[in-house]
Image 1: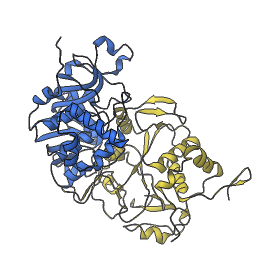
Image 2: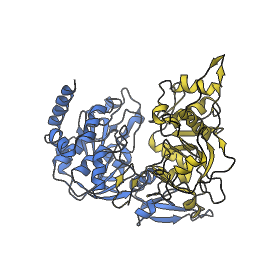
Image 3: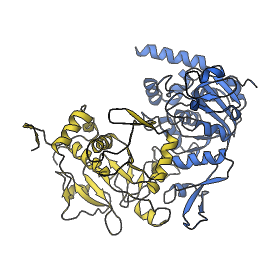
Image 4: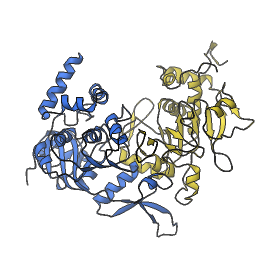
Length: 282
Length: 255
């Protein structure tokens, strides 16, 4: 069986401008931020990003890497509105496909199941239909005759997710309370890249945790990256919570200034810059 | 005045009437998930759970179902939460950046969606919520900026749009809108908004002035009911001793 470990830079070298990229996590929770930071260091742009949006979307939007965003929301959770996303969106910097949380989930399910669409009782009667003129409806072929929205499959060229543990083969484990939709992102993608807090031996995965924590299966995974604090500053329970102080700093700093101080170097430089910032706060 | 064992209680604050008004949304709701968004609805949900809606299910705000003392009784990650919505066993109380006279709600953006003046959260779960489970709303500061003639982006579906899709909207219901001025419902022939009760001290003129559309205020509109002494004690001493409710609904000085 093949060893799929690689660096974040190697992951990004496999991504191309113009791709459709799914990003796991939810809001400001367990986002693959080390992979996003690597993406920001690369020249990859013109992306269609599919995400339950948090700072992943905020940073990519602020850096001008988005051609299009598919989402139901963008939020930092403890800070409801993502300021860098807002600025970019209000400036008309990218195209938006706004669907709701359920349509998004069923779109991923459709892609994972190789279906063109799935029927959902949602969207109809709302302006989601107005702002997505390409959305079609479907009528039940049974006697009820109800009309549903036919949510198209959210097929992805690549997916980026971050989990607590993984083995070298690509089996990914979450140890927090919510899997979010990370397995679906991987199943919906042609190539999925999993970063994790720590790479461990396969046998180690179930030594202390139940097998149902094994969320991501290796047949859906192309690459595994060991990225300690790889979700920072979003939460990665139980390894660490959200870095609220740093998130506040991110949200209140103009983007060019934030990027210059924290994102100009590699991941090691990012960690050092955060460390230095933390010392200043004491 | 309410008294408990001879001790006079301070009269209810506006925030406490709001708590009661939110809690009443879930009276006798049975064994369903309550999803309160905002401080006052969360206190209201816990009050309902402790008193007249003892079978309600509550989450910890993340993926766990918890008892009142925090004991974990279940697991509800987002994917199951979204499935529960379409099963209908839930009554959510969402916020609203804008709401109109038929109960259409907007949390997505202000202005033209193509290029908004103010980008807000996004539609989130509002479209799926409103077509599948009862959806109420909470507005901490009743004003013409929120209660508008027409919302800029329909996220939560109101009665007029629901009526245009009778089969798909067979589970659509907006039981109530609670604001710091009163409780509102859609119990009118055309399902436009009506004042169901006004919080004590609020006049019909005041609520009309703060509403950007023609609001029905019945001549015999009732005041929002008084909290019982036991309810006040629960709110003040057990559920919200830090008085976070007053930060969401400060006492308005008399007009």
